[in-house]
Length: 249
Image (cartoon, rainbow, N blue to C red):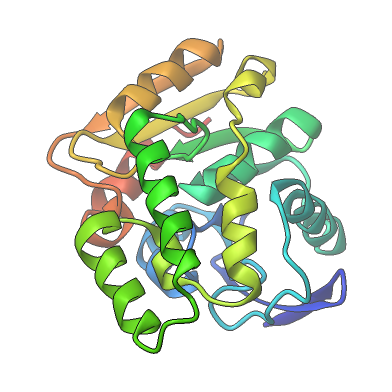
């Protein structure tokens, strides 16, 4: 299905029938990677909405760099257009950051919040500062004929694990806008019932983030899935759906 929100043509799918349940994927992800989880939740009597966030999947690219607040504004338009209210909201990674903001701004609309490996905590560690400095230094040599090869080698062997290396154009600045915002300060303002689901082998959003989120959201419960990493929706979809259904209200 397609819908136009803020002049961006957006792709979404609806599975099942019943109480509305909205799933927001993470950075670089799409509808397909959450279909299996959605189908299992829908089997229990829920109408599950999965959306390709603008700039991802088969939704249209965004015209200018966005930040978290712009995605939240877009999401407000999406839920309003589809008449979603008192819906269950699940957000994974970047989608979890968006979901947490929506829960603060519209607690009357969110019946229950599920944060799955949510990227709400942004730490400026010594390692991150060092890698940021390396990235800036690399740009100095843009005029060299072998610059592209040099840049790829630095990112592959030194910077390595960063979503920044997998984006281009407007999404590069969008990514930098997103990771520059630490959402930890607003977690205590979340008042809706919250379930936090995390893998203990997550090397993208470490388990300590889950404990901090759990501590700051008063009405929350933390569920840790042994052996699961950041992509638990793809490698343990049955368990993720099971934990959601066991704790849904």
